[in-house]
Image (cartoon, rainbow, N blue to C red; front, top):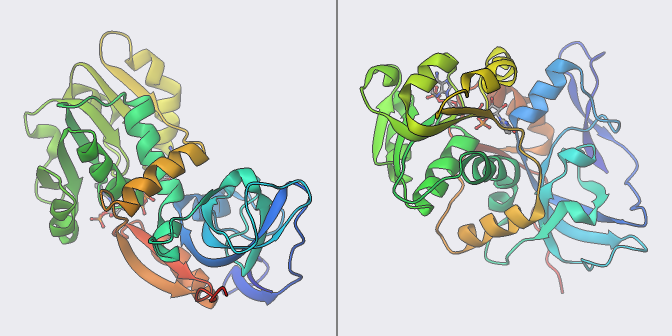
Length: 318
Ligand SMILES: NC(=O)c1ccc[n+]([C@@H]2O[C@H](COP(=O)([O-])OP(=O)(O)OC[C@H]3O[C@@H](n4cnc5c(N)ncnc54)[C@H](OP(=O)(O)O)[C@@H]3O)[C@@H](O)[C@H]2O)c1
């Protein structure tokens, strides 16, 4: 099969297309013929930190068809259309096939394309766990989403609206129209206005991108408000882990999120996608041999929503 391997000895480009053995699923695994995979910050951040999958193949968010089933795997049959985040099982999505434990996968509704399903897992589950679990979102709250234009941000806006909140989104100028179309009630262009000086307070803040100081976020919280640090610079994430508890003395809470892949959450979100309540925003499509360009584009930090790699056009099943 064709796969994009990480090979740092390759001087011009560490992600190279190679022909390698097709994997064989173990007892609890299924073999997935991948149709589409999306790129995440987890791919390039792991690469930069030297955390390389054993297979040397990155790619977490896959969608495809079950091609073979391990002896003890019983949830899926050959031909089933599935999707999921396989980062907890060693990545492996930048390839034509991957063998993964069946517990990593959920069924893809037939009305949802493989590209759309591949855009969902990590970004949407992160948004959901930030809002619902860490943020304990409640209907009627005022929510601020900083870094609204990326994969996590675009899902966060739509999920926050689904929960019946009033959403203020912070993004760059070129993204304002799309962010408004996702339902944000107020959009602040961070290049023109400093959202920390707008004089408003929020019950829930998601700090996804565009690192402002933790103190600035805390000042924007209403009494009993919660700020969830989702992403941004590595130093911002580390500071929130170190000082979050200290800054949470009193009624305002500063929490950091380490999202975990979860098929129940995936099933919840894909239903919203299938019903048209949530739609992934897809910025660019690439082909498998263009994976290095796709990763480089996302790592620039200014993608609008998700970047998809089309691995194979969906084969017809009799
Ligand atoms: N905690 C977790 O478990 C978890 C899970 C997944 C991801 N993350 C983290 O979440 C972050 C976001 O990931 P992502 O996949 O959504 O997308 P991303 O590709 O990192 O974000 C790109 C978006 O960020 C916006 N942005 C950049 N600088 C900004 C600023 N100063 N203010 C406001 N927006 C700004 C860009 O908009 P412009 O082009 O307009 O600048 C662009 O739309 C990353 O840091 C990632 O590592 C954390």
